[in-house]
Length: 87
Image (cartoon, rainbow, N blue to C red; front, top):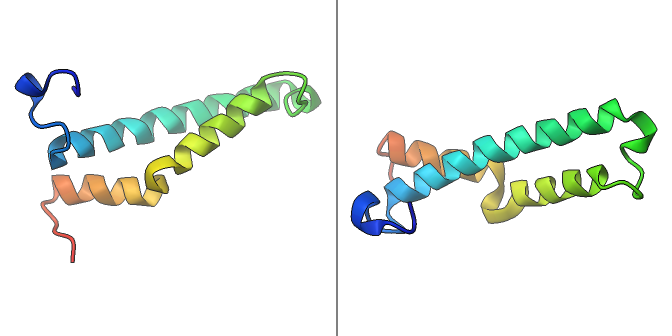
């Protein structure tokens, strides 16, 4: 969507920002759940630094906090879809 502003609209328009935040929320939640399941499946090997699962889980958690965290993303999405204004 960012590569085709002629088709989707301005890059930093509220519509594109809301869609990007929605996508970020869904993808990061799915990745976090998958990494947590993998860590649980491997029991004590899942948290061992010798394997990469713990590192991937930490990376997903950092991405989850990047650009404001979950609540800020939800507020941006709600602002767009419900035509709310910031005070």
